[in-house]
Image (cartoon, rainbow over all chains, first blue to last red; front, side):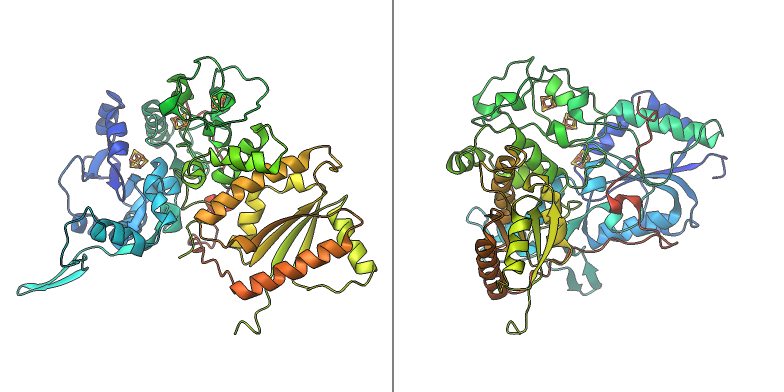
Length: 325
Length: 164
Ligand code: SF4
Ligand code: SF4
Ligand code: SF4
């Protein structure tokens, strides 16, 4: 508890896009509840605070920390460790923190390949072949910038995590519900779920929340949204559009299929699914209507970038985690 | 070093054809490389790609999936599903940089002990030539009390009611 008697709240972004921060602000008047019930002590996006301020805080003095973004470099990991020590409840917030998220797609390339692409491709004007140096000596002393890791990690691959709020970003109504629950728990009016739980989501798959009609799935060709106008009432997968609903956890009210777009899997693996991509392979295999090896090969080639598609948000937390390198 | 390298290959066989083929190979005293650890499932259609990834991530140098010939599946057409899954699995493995020879699909009827043995010998030789896979999946940290965070196990619990 801080001087004003309120429990402390922190939010941090590591390898993140900022969308998770916006999603928190999107809880509208709910944000006033956060302010009324918490003393916001650290939130780089919303207020000025220095890492050393957090370092100076006693261990476990922050009641709730929402951590969004993946772990891409040693700065991300350092802050994760620091916030873990200072927080009673550390929440992996959003797909990047939970599963590695979009930055996690970097795990399909090596660090070397990523740096080459950024600094040495034809579109880059870098005649001296300069590369970022993590230490630079100045007359005043050495400067350090964070060191990029070989691979991207989820938050729980660096520190133990108490809860997971999935989504890219999490739905605002879900965030509001979780914040409401924590406030109630602090007042002794509710109990927090057991550690390790996924909160702000449900127990089933996106397909389960999707209202589109489903019949026999027999696909002989995959197609893409850019070239096809799908029917609004029929399952998208049945229409040959790759939809990750079957492998993905529910909790978003099937937001994308409702908007006539396929689910891309942002809520992470459905309950009991260990590897979201592997589940998608099984799901896709069971809807393709062919018994001929050559034809199967041809149909499957219509799945553009299966790895990037099936693991769009979860490469670092998949069973393989990264490409060979 | 590759002289001494003996690959570990996990072999998923089906109860009705390929496991019997392996059995027959044994009973007929056909000699074949001892590197494959056979796991018997009811059907090759049971081979979830998760099994393959788990084997590779946790130390196998290769994975062999085998089942009844197309058209001969005990469960009518589950092995066609295996075939379709395998096509996607191979595309993913290629994107991950895992050599083609490390993961194979072989059809073998209960009478084809010799064929299975031959395929195993061929695969072991190929994987030997490739060397160890040594997948360096970084292990996840344990909590202070030595508990593996539940997320590591994969079956994270969800508390319903928190969701609105
Ligand atoms: S989960 Fe999505 S919205 Fe949140 S930081 Fe990652 S990319 Fe951005
Ligand atoms: S696959 Fe997609 S469109 Fe089809 S039911 Fe599931 S979520 Fe809906
Ligand atoms: S439908 Fe899929 S991609 Fe869209 S918000 Fe829901 S889980 Fe995310």
